[in-house]
Length: 254
Image (tube, rainbow, N blue to C red; front, side, top):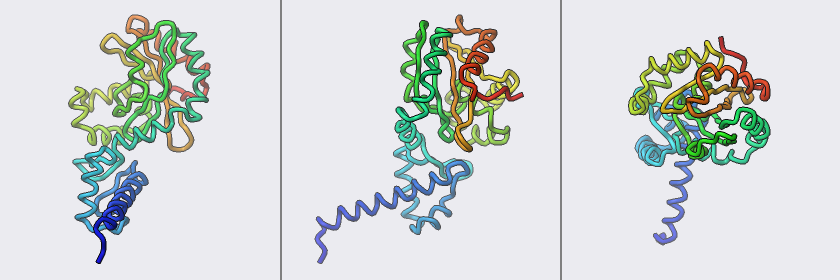
């Protein structure tokens, strides 16, 4: 007869292995999403077990389910963990000297932001003479793509159909933020026309530019300041300064 005390740990380990197997499958299909049926087929789990485990993973923020399509993607917690591991990675070390230069020349605050699926994650901040103390809180923050000037710069790379699908997937959160699809599309169009993203709200303004990392990833630099220090007219000047010192930044999207 099996000893329950010995069986329980192994049972728990098996459940963990199965759950992480589901996370791995979702990660492989993050961009397009993956259905419950395909997860059941690929994992070998029965439908009830897969559904129960996915519910627990959703609760933990490791996966999320699109209410419209029913497809699963990585959740914000999973993407945040991935980004946290990049905090001292080569990307930060590579960008930091240029960020320091931009902070010194502009006198303002320079952010390094990485796209993680449907989200953006702030990896690093260099502050200039006119530092804004509250900006420090954004380092390590993960936000929905499109909420923030750097993420608008990255979102503008996508075609209009992909932006519509993105807004639909996150309609509830965009509603909380008061951002309709038409408003998001106006920000994107303005970014494409100007060649850089610019937002001014609640006394703060910022300008952002993206650049590709290899074939799939996208990063962005942005400069933020008080609205009085960064009117629309100065945004083009700062965008040119950013391109001068970081040539990888994308050319205008016109």
